[in-house]
Length: 261
Image 1 (cartoon, rainbow, N blue to C red):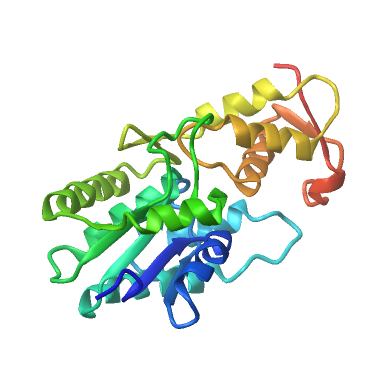
Image 2: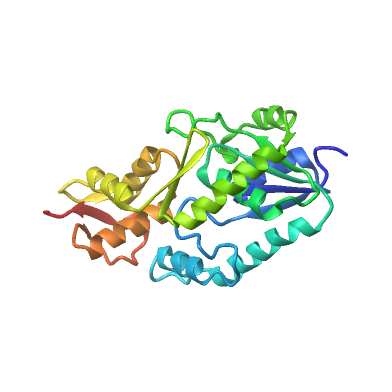
């Protein structure tokens, strides 16, 4: 049995593009798209995942037709649940992204004591701080090759520990999950919102640079521009920030400012 046997799992299309040349055309690669670091998790493993689908529909930019989140999330949950009923090994490529780490914990919980090998290819630094963190998609081809050579199976003890962490994260059902020192920390949206308010000036400023700066500042998880723009829209509904254009306007031309407290 080789490291390329069985299913190879990655988080996101960019990660898939990065690892595909190393695995070859015959490799079975499954790309998972759900960003597990944000939003409610209570029904993420319970199709039709209605609560989680509703969350992503709310995050999606207004004025733009959203993907079929209910269908996609249910298909993803069903596919992951079926892994325990097949015989081959399952390998996850992961870095320091909270979403990647949560997927590893989710796999440990779903596979339980199934007699198949769960492997990891660790591509991160082990540090989720903004200065050192690294996701699979950010690795060079040489870094990925080096990491692949150090692929390893998870012990029964580690699988049990990760499964417990996943169950706790689901039960806590936080709005945001950060990964620090190998442990997930759940919180509501207040810290993210506070950071965004600190970055907003009283004068109009272009939205894209603000989102880029906020993405660089979010320690413990890789915040996306999609998620951060949604939080700004929520702050606008609270009367704490203002948009120069309608909320459904394109990101590129949008401007934002902080309003008086």
